[in-house]
Image (cartoon, rainbow, N blue to C red):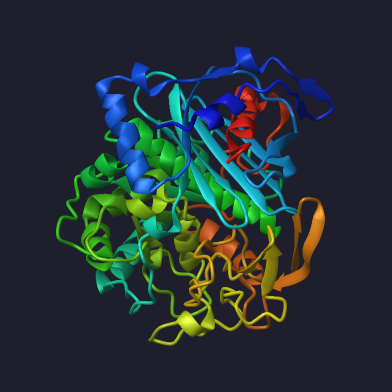
Length: 490
């Protein structure tokens, strides 16, 4: 049942301050929805999402699309803090809108994707993740906390090596490209018709173009329809771009192709799914057609793990290795697994303790586990917590007191995180890297190579997910009011 106190708090009078002006008419923008009005299908969907998230707090809402203009807004968090969120990017395409905002002082991050009446989103705090999901009835959405135990267990596994056929296909592609210099390999001429690349890219960013496919089983897990899983995938892309923005990495991930694959992963684990799907000739042909630098498939595999990517054995990324599988359960749990697997495409590695054979000449390209820092203990809400949140490429600590939540940052020994609680600093200058953990430097180094896998380095119009301009248009101002209110009192 929906928490009545929680819903009543949504209607408490107040103003949400956006930039330099206040927005007060919240009642006109959204309203709570009683579970009794849900259709049978929507009620079943709500029950499925709650069970999937093991959510102890949730609420149903209905709101209308409005205009988003502000570069900042105030967000009320479950622990009573009031946080000023700053917009990182706002992107409008014909098919959807993507938005991301962060408070790096409080370590709170938000990603949000709208597509018609479908909304997918994630709210990160220091120690919790909340999902925003459509439930099937027009304009009704469920906001729910995600229990960390729902994230499929990830353990270091043997590296997956690309079969010789992948290298041969790359050789054939490059030979064909040289023979046909007038062939349409320019990214601006070889885009998918789904309208991913409409807005201008972030100024000066290195653009990496991504192709994503999903299976029938993944689609069923993700909501049973193409629109829902497409929104979830776009939200994962937004997470990746937000992690680049938070880390000061001048890279922008562009989703240039998104669609269904008939590949059947039934009975296969992540590695078997990767080998079976990537070896299909039509996958490589489609990649060449849409000029995708990296290619991923979303599956519902057997066994544990969140993702797999063909291994780069040197610091130099290889185009034949730029294939990944992702577990839909991890994608739905809010884990930024898409960004993590993209890191492997860049030839970035796990934290040293989680690196498996064969040994990679990865130098400083490791993730940061966050457990052996001298300032590892944080005070939070009167209790002692271990801030073992690992950076993008690291595995979680085995310490049961640690959170398994990945940070939306890439390791960097020069990057210091400061955390606040109720406006008081409880941790300052917590550095998230070392001489052997500097994904910031490595991704910056590798990005031009990856960007050139299927086109000129940094080329292509991009998807505008790196900042955006004022003319990029419209999102949901009401969503910010909704999220502010829904988190208040949790």
